[in-house]
Length: 148
Image (tube, helix red, strand yellow):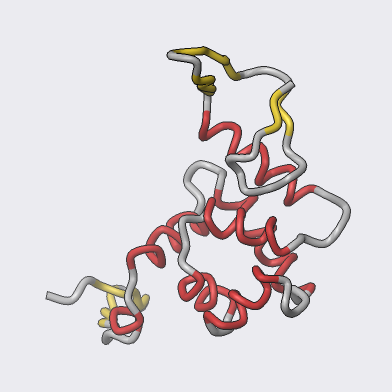
């Protein structure tokens, strides 16, 4: 059994899916599906019957590939709040915990609208978020269009 510390969490152990090799007296570990391990950890966190720990929140945020600022935008709070939650300085609000779990589980599904929204936030700047939105009416229905 391998104590998987690469996740940043202290309680993750791999039963299989890894290989230990030795080269020049150094031990190296390779994983058969690194992304699969990370996703399995995130799903286990989302399905656990206890509130997320600060380390687990940070792990899920990183799995989303979001900065603290981007997660703050998603959860309607500031970067400092996210940082305090991740450091354990303040409790993670129950609504933030539940929302983050639901968003993660939805995001790993193919064709997920949540995944598309999160992906757009990853590279978005606040200024871009405040850019003008252009709407067009066609056949009695309004929709957003790409500005020229």
